[in-house]
Length: 439
Image 1 (cartoon, rainbow, N blue to C red):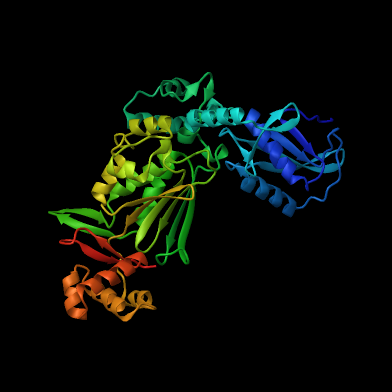
Image 2: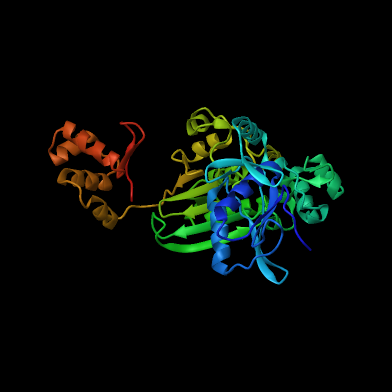
């Protein structure tokens, strides 16, 4: 059978034409959302012999994932036509517009044309209104849904479990005879079959950096499962204290369990599911970092969510289901709860990631670590650090009296230590304390 080029199918005679292939992929995605490209077939449909190795396939995949933005992960395979091996690249993506090396193209018949400003503006406007969780999944059928998972949810939500299809329709997860992405994310028998980013990576590190890994585990599954596993992993790998109330024992984790749960749920609820990356939990000696792909939604800033309690949800349908199962706090309340339970919780946006950091209260800085930290500092700064190590609540006046330099000199040295990231102040001048920050 002879293949033909069309609006969703493109031929490249050689694997060396990767730049041209990237343009075609961008153009097809922007017009149709999915397509197929073959390396090793001429425009007239005749196969051409190419040297194809595992390295060739890796290089093709690497070029596509690094040079198409937003990122996509194509399916790449070798097929045989007329006794000639050709490379088949299948790709799809709904988060238009897609660029190839920073430029945007659109498919017209079997040609790729550079987009004009109106076309580009229209696609960016479409992106703003596109919600991943409400997209219809054409590959899935009702048979992919686990009735057991759905019944368990109905029990949590205190709603009557009926026929699978009727229940999904009542929840807004089944439209026009098709399942939405949210349905598969929450109740699929095998969510990873549809979404390779429905994964959780958990790691424990020996120190305050990523240089030495003590433990690492990956989990795949629906959102309810991933949330539970993230919570369990954290609680298993931090210190748990104990409080006795009469005959009853109460476990007291070094980080408040409500804050842990809220941070974990937020990571899965607010993450960008168009991004092929996944949620990760990183447990260090002094802190826990929960990272999720996707910065704050709707133009919000860190200041908006922390000081003004403003919230905008990227995945409203998923949020609704989690709320019905009593997993989610009232809108706008989540960050406030975290800060209430863990006042030193920190939130950052770095490189397309949202990172929530919870400080471990049982972490103690050792004398050895202090000695390493002060290496290279001037004498007065060394004495300041060592005195703070002995007494984190020491005042500037006390430092001045012990060291024997002016309070102005104390201020200048403390400012330098703060700027170098070694020292920070927690709380007010009266009643607060100093914290030495390990590097």
